[in-house]
Length: 277
Image (cartoon, rainbow, N blue to C red):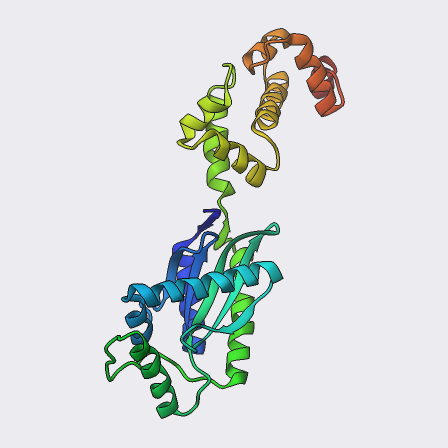
């Protein structure tokens, strides 16, 4: 899962959307798992469908198709689910990476109550699901203009949620954990497997998340941290450059000097002199 979110902040936003529109809204992660919704429970009709393995599979497949289409088009899509209700899906993007989806649904554009009741009865009877008298409960009937307006508001909610950091890439948590471990062991030789074990992930996932969240490989990121720590020691201590090289984990002093100059445009010695003046 690439998504992390502020539950309280996002729940308030979803509650406001529901207060304004009367429509249920749901947050999914990039692997199509439901994470948060308001109201918490689906309508009676959808609850009946989700209680049946066959129709639950149809619901999940309908959702998955909408997620794939929304991600491919990079925009909000409106569609009828397999049961004929209207839903809308929009991808949540952080730095052009799809991290999840917002969806509203369980609404109808049929203005006639009896026609809607008949439609829902037919769906349930097709799969031999007992029909209760209250199956219309929780299914708002909206005009096309109201549906389009709700879609625009949900689209605005996605931008607001990203801007206010209510949702975002899971990079912050990964970056914090990785950086803390690397800094604690900076003077030691480190292998990718050791780092992955410390973070509780596979080595392949370590490589993948470094690429996704940091924009560089683990070796490059470790080297970057070592050089940044060398910077701090050069200006904050009187430690010799040779010792600093060892302290930050470079086993080859010549390689350290060459790497430092390439990174900062100055030799370590000249960097220290410049910062001391």
